[in-house]
Structures are given as C-alpha cells and as structure tokens.
Amino acid sequence: MATANETGNGKGTYTVVEAARRLGLSRNSVYQAIDRGQLPFLKIGKRILIPKIQLERLLDGRDDQHSGPDLK
Image (cartoon, rainbow, N blue to C red; front, side, top):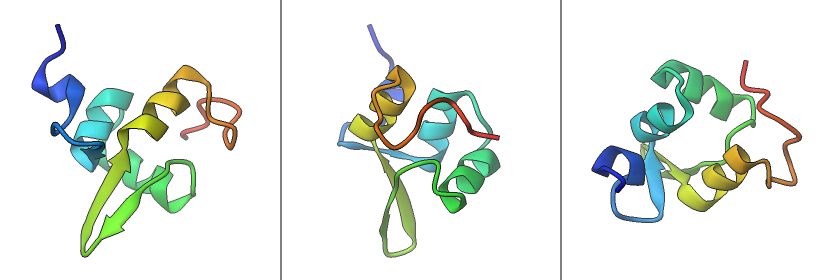
C-alpha cells in the first residue's frame, strides 16, 4: 500500500518536495530540471506543482517529449 508521501497530496499534482522524493532527487535538482524544461510543471501564484500523470509517464518512459532520464 502506498504512503501519503508516495501518492502526493491527494490531488492530481505533486509539490516540488514530493516530486523530489518520488524522483530520488534534491529539491534544488527538481527546480533546476524545471528551469531547463526537463520537468513539466504548473505555476499557480508563487506555487509550483508537478502534474502526477506527466511525472509518472516520464518515470515510465512514456513521455513523448523526453527520451530518457536526462535530469543532470
């Protein structure tokens, strides 16, 4: 069974910290990936959210825009 940290915030998005945990990256690495266009995101006010479906597709290799885990 998934924990709250694995399933995100109960909505269709992850926070930056939740996405970092899911990806096994630091929070700063997630911000850098967003800045480089390697990670899809939504910005609502000052808040940055990562859509769960797009992140899961990226992890599963089903994202058409990315050919592999190129998060450097």
